[in-house]
Length: 114
Length: 111
Figure 1 (tube, chains in turn blue, green):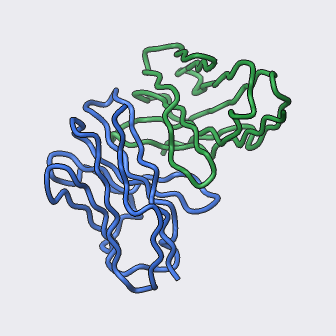
Figure 2 (cartoon, chains in turn blue, green):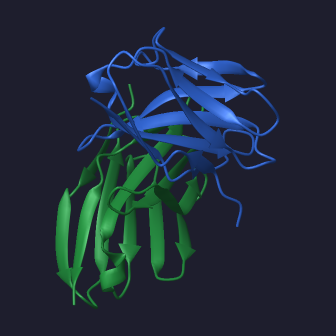
């Protein structure tokens, strides 16, 4: 069964450093997303991406965050200057098309900012 | 603003008992509802997807119902097994093509 692949599975970074989280969505999917889950809290939406541009973003997704699809397979989330409160599990997801389609999530990247 | 609530937050049952997990949402204008399973420290595994026009979906021992007008969905897991121990999340897709998640129900099935 097709999978969404995320790397790395765990990343530790110092406050103020830049991090890039990587994702390979399912190949024929058109919509890509990032979500995050702070320990003990709900999974929350960050950003959606379609046709090489951001289609929607939450208030969490401020200027410190950016997304990119640098080639035909990868989808990345960059955090420019990490803060302690950015520590969370970050999930990438993709869906095929349309509002009725379901999501496939990756296994997540656990980001720890120290 | 869509709010999704899951009750109970935690549930412990003996092996073999049926599980009933509840999900409620405040805005009934949804496109679909998806149930996920999350093991500790792991990703989200999709279990069932119910479109807004559907009343239920079944997969093996799992059955999910949807009552859009009342803003409720229920996930039934028949004849629970210790391997069913996990956190179960429901999420609704509404305007903007994004998911809004509930807080999850943590399930423990005792052998």
